[in-house]
Length: 311
Image 1 (cartoon, rainbow, N blue to C red):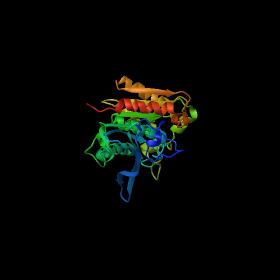
Image 2 (image 1 turned 90 degrees about the vertical axis):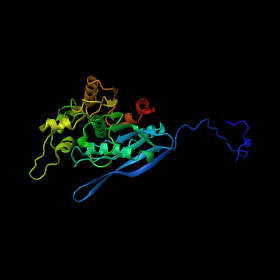
Image 3 (image 1 turned 45 degrees about the vertical axis):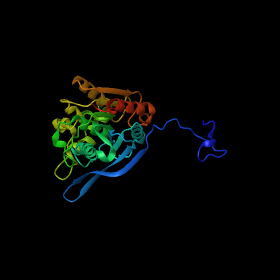
Image 4 (image 1 turned 90 degrees about the horizontal axis):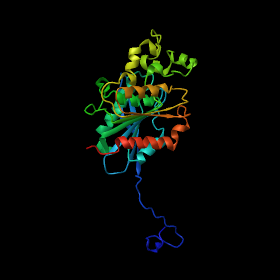
């Protein structure tokens, strides 16, 4: 409190003077409806969009690309705003990106995730991005996309479309109750869940094989284990990988915690950097994941991995 405020321009008796010691939290600009990819088919053009949160600071900034969950059937990207805003307030550019979903088939979501990263490198000067410090984050099916982008930087056949003069390699990856292996999404969740995942109509089967139609009766995930593993992060453990943060709820009824446990064990066995946080009692996308204890820890992890200037 200013003890002698009468010298302040605009002061009058009765005014309360607020004295802010510092203004370290940056102004955040929202840039929505950014078209980052256009996919041309025979009779149409599919446009994919992202929403960016851009801190109004001068120095080039680390960036997080967020991929939303939606069971491979939707990719509503303007969600998880608490997490995205917390990262932006820490100085990260945060790009929330949609991606193609069913009825599109693998590798469409992975191709889109990689394109989103390349788009940001192509337009780095517009958003103040440091192209050497890009991370990915996703929840559920979005966690799958984030994992695949991070695990397959050496798989060039999935770098398709625009901005191919840029790399889709990322420097950190966080996955929240994500899918690491399409072959055992429901492991240890019970017999009824096993039957669901053995169906030809379960989302991961549709992602791999498409919808039953005309002369095609549909196919299960396990009908082609080789394809299922190629389409899974667990099928890409060799080579260099960025540091991983893996989170899962111990009470998740939809995506088995085994998905995160097996990814963590495999990354460690291959001598890759990984942290695994199991949240006691948390389910799938419930209120646990919006609490400061989770959000602050995730932002701190990304700070530790990305928020420094490379030598």
